[in-house]
Image 1 (cartoon, rainbow, N blue to C red):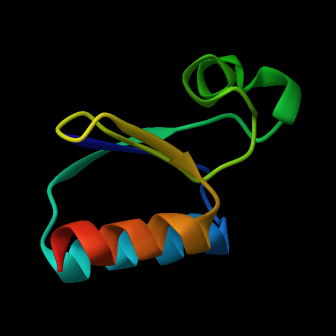
Image 2 (cartoon, rainbow, N blue to C red; image 1 turned 120 degrees about the horizontal axis):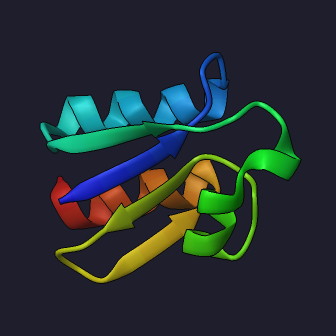
Amino acid sequence: MVTLYQLEGCPYCELVADRLDELGVDYDSVWVEGLHSKRNEVKRISGQRQVPVIVDDEYGVTMAESERIVDYLEQTYA
């Protein structure tokens, strides 16, 4: 299962979500708070408060930064 932590209106988050959709990867979305200081769940998961973040349980991967995530998705699921 893939989980995407994202913020509404975030173009980087949308880029990752679009790629997940294009690749046909099932995923859950977790919508996070707009204020960085309130993104405690994201910090607990990834060690930082920036989004997007994906957690891929099947491969044991937790990753931030949209370009890295898209590269990972293409290498893993394309």
